[in-house]
Length: 207
Image (cartoon, rainbow, N blue to C red; front, side):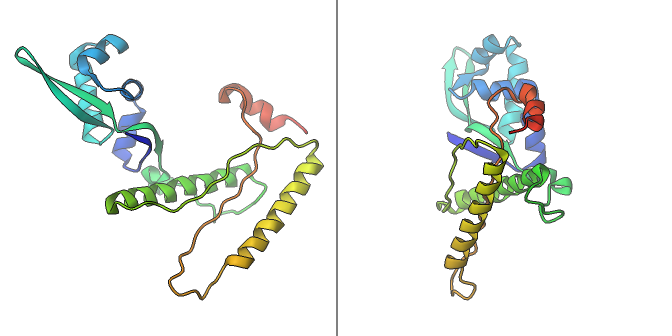
């Protein structure tokens, strides 16, 4: 089982967003049969089987083993990943485009950049899995508490200058065999409460 899988197929995305099927995916972090799942989710076994077949059709669950019980063969299934991310590729016609209106201070532009990150890394993972090769990536995830809005602005400026200097130091446009890499650095308020109750507070709070 993968830690995270990227869903690029629109039909697979539609299947995964069904509330019942999403619940089944959650339950199938551990192997289970339709009979076992029926007891957990409160649905008839036949109904659970129907949903499992839809999930299996799009590679969201996989067969672990088959058990013979009398005249019945019980199929034990497992989710193919512990969690799933839907790539913007699934909404190709309306996927965000950061180049449309670049603005370092725009939260919506940051969202478009993040969506592109999901799309690109998802495509890399898919390609690497087919080629059975690893993907060379690096990320930093941390948290910083600013004393004031002025400190936040100063930090952003110093961070931008430092990253620009590093890019200038290591970027080689003429390197033979060189491979371009994308770098994304973001700063945004931390979300410490359930998103539905904190979004307004975060957006309106002044440092």
